Image (cartoon, rainbow, N blue to C red; front, side, top):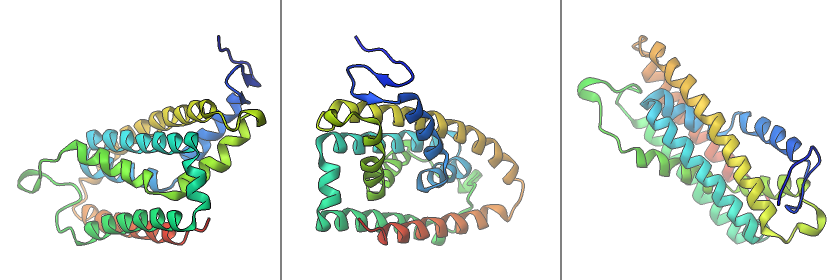
Amino acid sequence: MYFINSKKIYKMGIENFITFMITALFFIMTPGIDTVFVLNKSIGQGRRSGVYAALGISSGVLTHTFFAALGLSMLIAKSVYFFILIKYVGAVYLIYLGFLKLKNKRDFFPTGANKVKRNSKNDFWSGFLTNTLNPKVALFFLAFFPQFIEADQMDNPIPFLYLGITYALIGIIWFLFLTLFASVFSQKLKGNLKSGYWLNKLSGLVFIIMGIKIALTKV
């Protein structure tokens, strides 16, 4: 039987679980690639797209959790060639998304004849790839999770899985809140005829800059 106090989750090998949740929330709330991606989808394409993007990003978190539990994240961190491969694939993907935004001649808020039927699965997979192909997430988990795991449980995958699932659930709650806020905010922006054009360009530049930042990431 497992139970929680302020210091430890017994039989899970996890210490200071409440502190972990609070710290994780602050990290998740800090603006980054995931936040920009969810806001971009929510403001430009509506609440549904934002929700699917948030679910995709959280699935990417679970993928990194699984890698960490199996020790694959450590392999990525230690293998220069493997790290470089993932780093540049992720960077190219983000830069590609950025250029698509820059060259897109449609309004950021498509309506009427300009509105294109979208498959929400695309938003999910875009969010999933954006997170999964970011090696900084793997490095972050390797540095962050062990601080809340007992020393004699470092080789046990269960604590990593438990912390990763908790991190993903906190992320889903935050991003869904962000999606709700952004979709309401987008209604006001739609009243400005020029806002759609500039938001398209701005979001494209942000994706390109973040792609370059990933490309410059060092182990």
